[in-house]
Amino acid sequence: MADKQKLLQDTDEAYAELRRAIDGLDEKEMRRVWLGTWGVREILIHISGWHREMIPAFARLGREEPPYPEGVSYDDADAWNSRFVEGKSKAPMADILRDLDTFHRDFVTAAAALSEHHFAPGAPARELFEGAGSLHYREHAGQIDEWRRNGAP
Image (cartoon, rainbow, N blue to C red; front, top):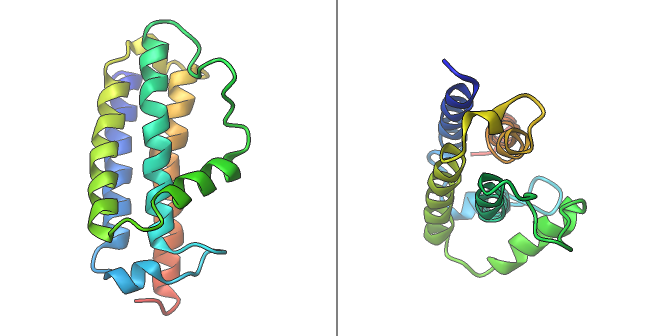
């Protein structure tokens, strides 16, 4: 199996792990703050936010352009995370979950449209895809699992 296909499959598997980690939580539980100033709700919002940002980055890479528009930097991830969360602060949980599923699907579809060479080790698309995909999902699924094991719902 080629690198690209392995990465796509791994990301879908990691996404399933994230969805299992939140399975059975109600809205009150998802709003409970336990990770700094965040709960599950904020984690899911920020994952979707990164997907929204990466989808056009993949399109630019497909045109052999830099992934980010000139003048845009993602170096301050905390500021971006805050922006994503603040933008959805009043959104109903059903919308947040729908966004999570929709943007995951669109994120994977946008990456899948790229050629195999974009997924070579060290290639920008691979780093963006893993960083906002499988690695990101597993990081947060692990945090949520640990929170739940330590007495949360």
